[in-house]
Amino acid sequence: MIKLAMFQTDATPPLKAPLCIGLVKPAKKIAAPLTVRGILITGAEDPIVICTVDWVEIGNGGHDFWRKILAEAAGTTTERVAVHTHHPHDAPSYCFSRNELADLQSVAGIMEDTSFAENTARAAAAALRAALAAAKPVTHYGYGKAIVFRVASNRRILGSDGRVAQVRWSACEDKALRALPEGLIDPWLQNLSFWNGDEPLASLTYYATHPQSFYGDGAVNPDFVGIARSIRESTLPDVAHLHFNGCGGNIAAGKYNDRSPRNRLILAQRLLKGMEAAWAKTRKYPLKDNDLRWRVKPVALPVSASILSETDDDLLKTIDNADENRQNRIKAALDLVWKRRRQSGCLIDITCLRIGNTSVLHLPGEMLIEYQLAARQIYPSANVLVTAYGDCGPGYVGIKESYPEGGYETSRASRVAPEVEEVIMKAMRELLAD
Image (cartoon, rainbow, N blue to C red; front, side, top):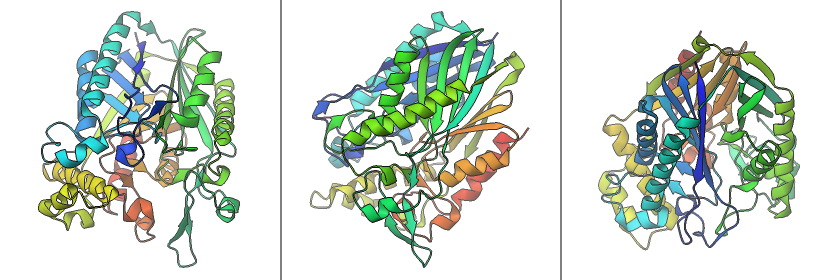
């Protein structure tokens, strides 16, 4: 018999903790708490853990640590654990293991609070263990979807030469940029739910966009996604609510957000309407033990040529140079650890949860929206839900044609080469195949 256990714990950082990998002001107040939320599925071979954290990102050895400690608590293997963040910027990150921090001491303290991150993972594992006794039978799963209006827009604005000419960030004060069309997005919010008869147990929502409204002032909060989720909790209080960010690397609310604080609630209400509509349109399906499967595809993502061109000594010089621009020091630290991991043979697991005619892909990094749309085309007869922001070690993951286009995502913030598209597409095809 398939059973479901739900767990949740606090993930709010202490004051003065670094936020957004050290790229914004540290925590000066707690505007709203952050959480870890997860589900444990048993009864279909080894247990499966799916977890989402209200942090900006978890990557590299930090991601390994989370998966390992949750796997131990669940009595399963790390390959059957998926850990994601939904990427609010006024939130912590966890990018390095203690071994990876060995020669990053000059910059590590401005990027993350490693002890806090590890303790949060341990608290999540304890919450998972405590939830095991309360696991409930799952007799049905549900699927519904609805369009979210006036939230997402593509942030890469191409010029006549086919290259990125302007970027419409999450908050955009330029009226001319806001007046441009939404561009390529995925407007659908999808909802996967688990039921014990007529009793709903868990609601997992999936929508692709950067979740920022106004940000960077040190006020810790899960932004408009967190508000929408909290309202859903108040209307369905006995249901576990988990939200996942899709392939939102090049998607943001910039067209509909001029940085005014009032827009946080406006965007939350629009997302909330999508959540409510998807839930209302849910269709339930009986669930048998053999209807649920977990697939894993380890992949070797190619390292960016620009990173390979720099020696470890060059990167360490940038990291240790107190006079260097902070963003450059942080970038060098992330580049160095990613390069070392790949050179040591570390692979990234792409996983897929298959439930009847519904599949959920778990992807790493900040994937561009094109991957999410491609996944639907690979398996058009099924319901395909996609979440990115798993292991964020690779940074942004573009498609091949996006690299010569330039732009922040692929010219500065991607740590993988253009050939990554072939690797990801091949893995998605294999995981989604019947």
